[in-house]
Image 1 (cartoon, helix red, strand yellow):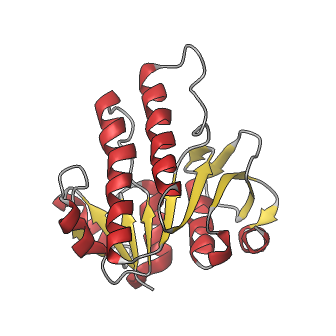
Image 2: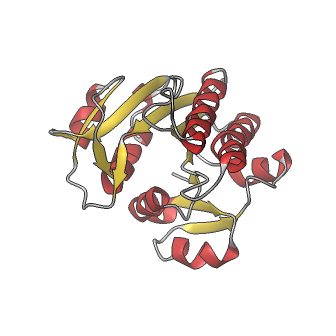
Amino acid sequence: MRIIIAGGHGKIALRLAARLKSGAVGLVRNPAHVADVEATGAEAVVCDLEKASLDDVVRVVEGADAVVFAAGAGPGSGVPRKDTVDRGASVLLAEAAERAGVRRFIQISSMGAGKPPAPGSDEVWAAYIKAKTEAEDDLRARDLAWTILRPGRLTDEPGTGLVRLAPEVPRGAVPRDDVAAVIVALLDNPGTAHRTLELVSGDTPVIDLVATE
């Protein structure tokens, strides 16, 4: 399989690429990040989704088996980039996938998306949740075999392979290793299309749980 991973230098994306190896293509905006992606065994392509045209992105995704949106503006970014990356880049990538005939699309969103931010929330957090919610809404309206994954609080602890995945779960944390493992399982299970699933650590092996979702 050829899997396009947007946000290819991100912590989840690098873990995912390491699992997929030569089947992965990590999109990065900074040429200095190419070596880190290639060190996982994946291919790296420089493509800045904040600046690229639709035609540019269509050319990148053509011939792929699936697309994973793992990009994010990241810590320290302000309100404007929450919109241009967390919403705008996802919309652009989904449009490109649709144009290129790549139907399988996994979107990494966030627990809390789909609801208004709590009163008194930090301005940047509120912008982030709004951007993720709008990206989800855009994806659901498309003719794609989409799955939206909403992880809880992300950690760099070693993965356990044990998770809780359902349309709604209690708030909690989950290692990025386990998020990457769940994405691989979702890619292997087309029956999870048109599902919005929340993810935290739990007591069910990843493969067993995804097989039932």
